[in-house]
Structures are given as structure tokens and as C-alpha cells.
Image (cartoon, rainbow, N blue to C red):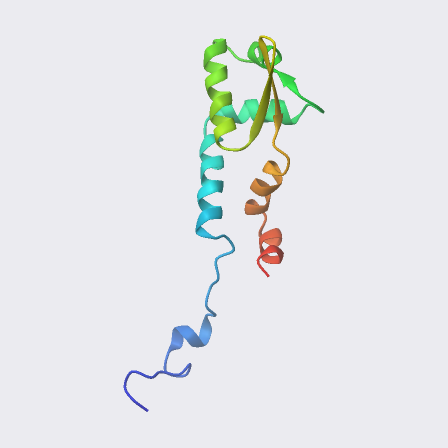
Length: 122
């Protein structure tokens, strides 16, 4: 056996620790990081919570009174949630209606649930 060849008996790390496999690809991690970054702001987290708590679409006019912020500031936060792929919207006249993107919350929850990750990576 050459000096460069090692066996499990020669390598204590290989003997005790199996190789790790990443449950997320680089692309998945980047997309999820953008979503979690968007939720790193308390206003955006509350906005998402308000939208998710409603059975259908929510008008921006219903969201604005829940905050002590101007309507343009609320719209800015909603834009960041849209860019992160968490909510989508539709303009109807002068108002914009928002809803949770289907599957967006489930993808975030899966990252935080070790059991879901273990079964999805197999």
C-alpha cells in the first residue's frame, strides 16, 4: 500500500463520521436565503403574517392601518416580499391585492423541520 492510500482504519474521522450530504443545493439555499432575509424585518414578517392569516386576497388598504407607517413604506415592504417570492399581487383600479404564493410557506417550513429535510433529500 502506498503512503497516499488510506483505509477507514487509518483515518479516524472516516471511521467514526459518515460523509455529510447537503439537503439543499446551492441554488435552493440562495433562493431560501433571499426569502429569510426578506423576513428578517419585523414589519415584513408582520405583513406576511397578516396576509397568510386571511383566507383569500388582502387589499393594501386593509394592511396599512395595522402599522404606524405611511402607505408608501408599506408598499416598499410588500415589494420586497414580492421580490423574495413570498407574496404576489394584482392591481384592481387604484388598489393592489396581495396573497401568499402557493407553496412559499411550506418551503420555508421544510428548511426548519429536520424530519422533512431528511425525507426530502432521499
